[in-house]
Length: 324
Image (cartoon, rainbow, N blue to C red):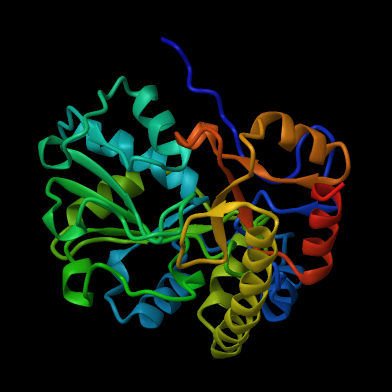
């Protein structure tokens, strides 16, 4: 079996870059309230193995019954676990977004699950909205999907414009996956959760059986509890206004420098440099100078890079190097 290479943004063998455009983390972060909660977490004790309080808090936050909350060590952990569950339930094929996070494919490969292009022919369907790397609506239309459908909503809290493809009642019919660490600017804290579809209580129990004990540590519990608090959400909403202004500035600078940009609803987007520049070489050159972009070849977009929105000082530094 040919293993799909794992390529991610963020720190690498060279450490943390001075200016990291390669991740989708909220550049206004870390959220002070969430950071304080994580720092105050009691790491000397196990969390409640049943996660009673955090499950109840997340259920109240989303207005759903507590049994519908499936906790996960991270979004990636849940991707692998629900893929395993789907295979045990008889899934024989998977449909992935055209351009998407690599762990969907990695999990399918681990279970020798064939990838098919037709979502209506698949028994496991992955959707992501807003999508990564494009930050756009999912395609094909989410409302037409069948089988076990998982909607990765990691970037929904970071939406700057546009509207979800599905209404609230439609989202109740599929799995919704959330990983708040991106929106809170705390990607180093691994914690996630999913909201199960209506009438999926048996599936939630089966997923629990597939999880290890204490799937969340004390710091992950603290992050998720903080996520449900009004002051954390108020900080997030304020940060979106800042990110929108930064995005307008960053896209204007790149347009002026001759870059071609794809529209996005998020504080990240894909862009193509001018004059057929080799993006792999460009990323390597910039990395050596303390700037990291995410080459989009692994997303199926050769010749493009994905850039997260960063503050003006980082934008100016990037453009000063590009214009040399």
